[in-house]
Image (cartoon, rainbow over all chains, first blue to last red; front, side, top):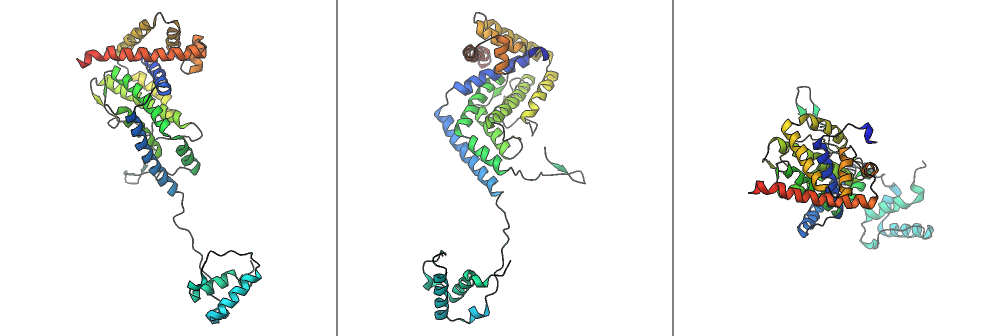
Length: 127
Length: 217
């Protein structure tokens, strides 16, 4: 072990002994209330910087997919026809569909047409 | 550091530090209040090592030093391998920097030392720690070498009568560094090693006081 090593200088030995004394203080010493307050503040700064680093992993530019044009048959439908067709479609799916919308009466005609075209399985291009 | 040279000889800033998500999570998990306090207690004791060499560390030296090391790691100036414990990286960095400050204190005695004012190598990674020993040796003047020898002699004389502490010190003089090496060289059991280390700390505090007293007068 130590036979292979170059004999340390006095400064090296003092540094090593100081290191071991400091390890002892670190492991078994006590911190003051002021030290604990300092640590809390430092932790806030650390968390802020970590949040910044995490944001670096969020893609800045998420590619947006352009919506398909609405079908002419859907555009031609009035509100009443649209609601009926929509209700029929949902029934046909037998509860296999969940929608985030709670109140369809406040949806505009165009939004309802878009939703209808989106969920209608016959409107999907074969891949 | 990581600065890149431009064609006209100027320097452009390095690319922003962008650690992996695993790195961020490991840092977040390990950089607790307890780690910071542990490191601060270590740095505070090491500051005494600087004072012993004639330097005057500022009262907030230990706090600033720990903050500095953590910040430098978070901006990528200090490289941390997240597969290894963060505490080891922080303590190694503090040790490296306090050694640097001690050398400076020996050269310019009574110079005020603060953790910001040091002209450090920017990427003072722990891996450079070993190499720094060799450099430090070259920097030793006859006066600082004599001072260190005298200090070590005082320390050893004070330990006479405490066979475990003396064995600890002699093991380090013989070249042992890690706990395992010291225990092997000194033939100390773990409990004896721990007691010796505790006594070493107390002795160094006592000598700090004796050493520092004339300077305060």
